[in-house]
Image (cartoon, rainbow, N blue to C red; front, top):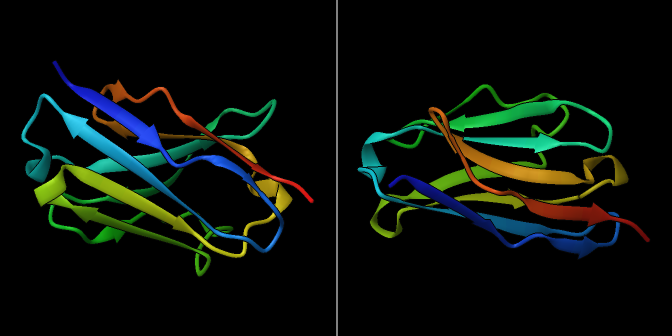
Length: 112
């Protein structure tokens, strides 16, 4: 059974940093691409980046480029989202996805 579990969300002040993790199980993690999405309040879910199976990152959303870093550790079945210089407009639920499988998300709130 394919499962994705996000962790690491929380409350952070503007300008702060957070690192999110997404752990996968039930599939050959090293061979599957993993997407990071987020859903801002009242908005549709949006793709912020794709981490390919070998690690190169594609489709990075312009508003996060230069502030967010994406990586994966296939030995740990985990992908990471390092978020720096966070802004209030980054407040959202962050999800990881592989093909048709989604995690439950983790809330990130950026507020003074």
